[in-house]
Length: 248
Length: 246
Image 1 (cartoon, each protein chain N blue to C red):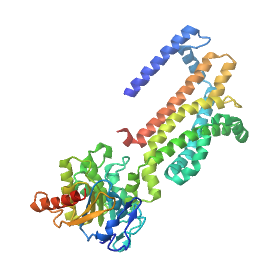
Image 2: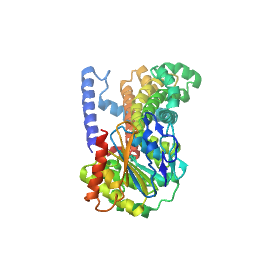
Image 3: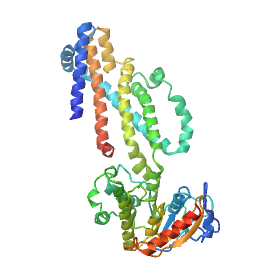
Image 4: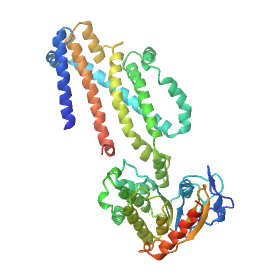
């Protein structure tokens, strides 16, 4: 997979008031089965960039490419999990999870769905409605709905922002475990430095001015088990923090 | 159970107030509940009474159906298409405040004095209530819900089927429940013109003959029709919008 703005497009991408100027100087190409974390302050264009990657918004200038094809509309290989989960309250958990398959006209294998729900620890909630779930459970359902499509690229827009610390860390570990099992590409938007370091093999640090990329931090051991408590984890967290603080 | 108890309390309070006002003003002006009940029982044994009930019920159901199939799809369309809404908005805003009942002579001229004229008049009044509620509900569908659906590979057709329609359904039922009050009130008015069937005619006929108990029978039947419709929409909402009752 090659998801890139600058590496392929000769012009910087720009969306409304969020010009992604600095992408020209920062290669954000994402190799297959690697995770990119976008970290930066509010309003810096992280979510806009993610929506552009999802093909849900079109750049006003420039272009993004996915496996050599310009990204102008949503693609089957790309799944998105939104900050507010984007679950449909009128559908049960099972119906929410199966919706993507139903829409795409794909065969729904109930056993596959059950297995995925069990993997994400929400099997017993299959027949309840989203409003009967906690925030963490809703996020698991949103993840299940994306993962059931077997995406090559999973986009996560501040997926754990509304959760308490313990639930957040559990879900980060769950995403890391799922990534190790399935090896999909991943792009994650977050405010949280430790979350970026836990899940992003490449951390793109964005500045306060919309679209400014301050730098990239390589983090090859992201998603590894027991990575959170390691010296490397804290060292990379400090590096990311320094970059953010220098330009704050 | 609470709802049933509420109804029992409401009916008891209403009957008490009714009986007191009957004692105060006399049976010649306000027929008491017992007198009306006896009259209702005797009327229920006649075919004429059921013809009137049937005619009114048919007009109500037909008008609600006609308004529903025209206003709801249009409301969903306008609410989800800003361009179409921009074009239609001035027309809606100019026509909405006009009391539609003033069009009654014109409607009867176009559609005749028979059932169609009355059904169309009722539908026009209900149309705007349903249209505006549905349009506003469709406009309220969040960007996040649209993104979710499109990111799953959905098209505009899927957006209607899986997002816009189900999210608007509770508002549509609310509009229908509000419409029941309107439809029964306007029914009485339209049935007072050029007809010999319907509860409106039944009440006015009784009035002409100074048959006070029959006037009250007519009022009770219209009230029951309104309650039955209201409850029917409530039950339908509980079935189709179970998610909204949690």
